[in-house]
Image (cartoon, rainbow, N blue to C red):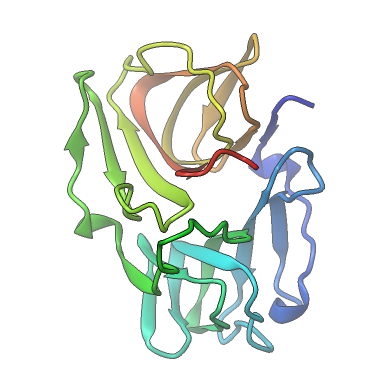
Length: 232
């Protein structure tokens, strides 16, 4: 399989030990070759959260889509907030009186010789200003540093005005996990066209020909991409 598109109507609720009975949608895991990361939707009920801390061993990025939660007792996760935890850290999450929907990315950290392990950090999407690109109507926000080789992946918000799309068909070594956060459009994947809307998820493997054009209301998506490494 060269790519996959998962829509809310295709969601299958699984479970993970650290989250007890909270429904977990495994959007992609390494069981879908050649994926080298996991991305999950975790729906936490009011008063819910981890039943035990998530053990160290994997670096993790958590993005709050809906509701309010708290990471490891002191990091607020309202809608649009995010947190990064390096592989050496355990972490936990709790909700209050309302439910929360979290998007979680998990991967094994690939060390770069001569560079320190990234430290834990957190923030909100609004902390990073929109950056204009060379294509008018196409902007991006970088939630993790893209100029620091100690980080082996990036999390970016990409926004397109109506009718605007990627300027060319991309073919590259990096794999993607893409979650549509607003609007919709047409994604071109390995010769196929897919109409996508908010809530849809796309996994794109390395070297999958890809392109995108936003629909009449514009579009935004949160994009995972491995960076600064060559796959060995």
